[in-house]
Structures are given as C-alpha cells and as structure tokens.
Length: 486
Picture 1 (tube, one colour):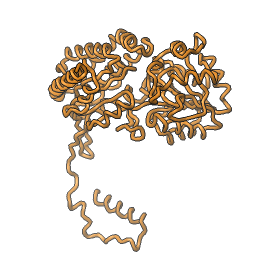
Picture 2: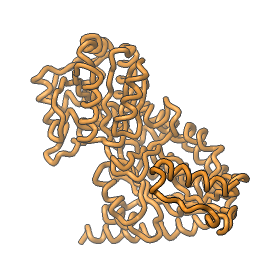
Picture 3: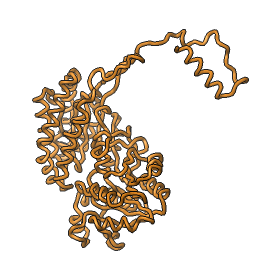
Picture 4: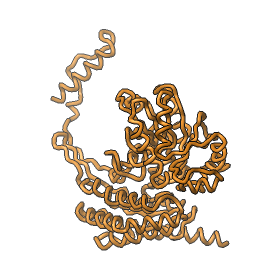
C-alpha cells in the first residue's frame, strides 16, 4: 500500500508539473529572441557561479567521479554551452532566402521531458535547461533517485535566476518524488512534446517505446586506435586524460586501446610511464568478475570509482600512483566484460597486425555495444583516418583528441553537448550533438514561383526509350526542366 501510494503521488505530481509547464511554455512562445536570451544568460551565469558547490554535492551524494572534474563539467554545461548558442537564432524568423522565396520560422516543440543520469547529474540539468529554454520550450525533469538532492538544488538555483530574468514560473521544474511509474507518466503524457533522454539502455529504450517523440542516447563503448604514425606520448596522454577525467563517467570516454604489433612495446612502455597499471592474467580474471553483474549490466560499484577504490573492492594490490587499470584482451562479446562499456578507469588492450585489422576489430567491438556513438583514432596518416571515418558505425570519429572531452565538443569544434545522438545504427533519432536546433521545428513560408503551365511539357516531342538509352533519357528530362525554369 505504501508503494502504491508513493507511485500515485508521483504520477499526480507529474501531471501537476506538466500542467504548469504547458502554461509557462505558452508565455515563452510569445517572447522575443532578446527576452529568451536574457533568461538563458541568467541561467548560465547562476549555474557557473555555483559550479563548485554543485560539483561537490553531486560527488558526495552519488559517490561517483571527482568533484574537481565535475566543476569543469558544470562550467562546460553553463559558460561553454552558452557561449556557443548565445548568437543562435531560435525565435521567429531564423532564415530568409530571397532568391528561393522561402522563409524559415522556428516553432518550439512545447514541453520537454528531461531524464537525468546519476553520473553527470548537475551538468546535464544545466545543459538541458539551457538548450530547452533557448528553443522556447519548458522542461520537466525526471531525476535519478541517487542524485536527487544535487539535481533539485541545481534546478532551484537556475529556475530562481531564470524567473528573475523574466521566465514564467513552472518553465523549469522537477519531480521531487521520482518513481518509475511517475517517469513513465511524464514520458507518455499528452502534454509532453519531446523526451530528451540521457542514461542507461533500459531508460532510453523506454523513452523510445513511450509513444512520445524522443531523442535518446545509448551506451558508449569507444575503442581508441593508436596507429603506427601516431605521436605515442601525446596519444597516451590524451587517452589517460580522458579515461581518468571524473573517473571515466562520460560515455564518450575510451573503453579499449588498439595498437599494431609494430608499436605495441612503445605504447605499453609509455602507458606504464604515464601511470597505467597492466594487470597480470590472474589479476585480470579477478577484476573481470566485478565489471558486469550477472544480468549483463555494468556493476554500479565500480562506476566513477578511482583505481585505488576498485582495487580495494576487488582485492587487488596495485601501485598507489596507478591511474588506470589495463587488461590485455583478444576476445569481443557481450560476455567479455573488458570489451564492453566501463564507466571507470579500466581499459582493454588489443593488438593487431595492421590498420586494416584494427578497422575490423573496432567495428566488431562497436557492433557488440556502442554502435552509433564514438571512437577515437590517433594517427598522422590522413588516408587511414579517412578510411576509419568512412567505415566506422559511429556518429563521431575523434582524431588526436581525448574521447571524453572531444565527444562532447570541449576539445573539438562539434556542438558542445552532454547528450550525444547515436543515429539509426545506435537506435537514436539523430546522430547530432544535441543543441537548441534539435528542439524546435521549422515552419516554412514558401512563395509560389511556377505555374502549372510551366510544369507541362506540351508542344514537345514525346520521349521514347527505343531511340535513346537510360542515361540519355535522364539528361533530356533534366534539360527540358531547366529550360522551363529559365
């Protein structure tokens, strides 16, 4: 009975929040670009000014990651994202083509449901609120229960700042009684226009199964290939910078390293020099038991934990200054933990004979888990880089940059985002780094430029296929259409 009452209370809370959000969104939809931007700037400023406080709250409540790195995430989600989107046209007429006589008008989708993970709770709230309001939408958050306090405090800070800048009350809100039933109601309710889902596979699948349009992101499992022409010390630095950042909680971070036989020794030596600890076969087997749970999901006990904490949990003895644990691996598969996503400072290490084999291995790894997400290549050979870019089943091929920070657009010129689309191959509706442009529709005002008579081909010689081949037929059709348009 207690559980039932809790579920009913959560469902009713969602309905109340959506009702208020829908009314608030009507007001947002009438605002000018200047008014919307003023609100967004206030959100970004308040979040940035509280970046350290919120980082510490998230780390203390979840036990994941490193609070100093979470400060960087909060700064990225507020200041960095705002700097990127502040001049973006998202209200009213956003483009006008006088030659083609087409005008594009931005139309907010309405109310967004923002699902928030425990790995990046405060930064994801800041980012999703910013891009939603920038596009003229209201947003209702479903928080991960393990990060509830940090998420609610983040929303209190940014919603208060937004309302002082003219944002209608209810435009940014959050469930305080999160349950699975309440979240299901949020996703399926008629007043929810779009789901912005970041989190585990089950949650993303539920979002796409809800009947509501959704942008979801599944797991990452990015391999990093260190090709023979790579600057090995720099490649290793970037990989370790990425994998140790917030203890590996960003899904775009590297999950495995692939090297060629010809550079294997140099790479291993450099990894050890920079703080990686290679596990013996016995140690590798010992740790392997803790990476995945019996049901095949990632063990939350290792997520976002340091090498030392993982060693203590698993009974391993590792150097006090070890930064990353590495296990040599040859296998790939659902039941091979090292070949899967590990949101912790743990890496698999594969050896191949050449870049062609690396290409095949990376594809195999990604199709097992992480298809559509991200992979990394460290190389000075543009031909090899392009081959990887043409063939890999990912939405991001990152070149000579840390995966975690490159994938989200911090060290690359992609759109800065904490929700990374995985495309059709990854079961996602888009392959974009999600920005405000993904959160509004475009209404097109199109003037007529031709009449029916212009489209008719009266007075012309009929085209037959007996005297000309298919290519000639196409060329003739094109010529006649172009002649009519002149």
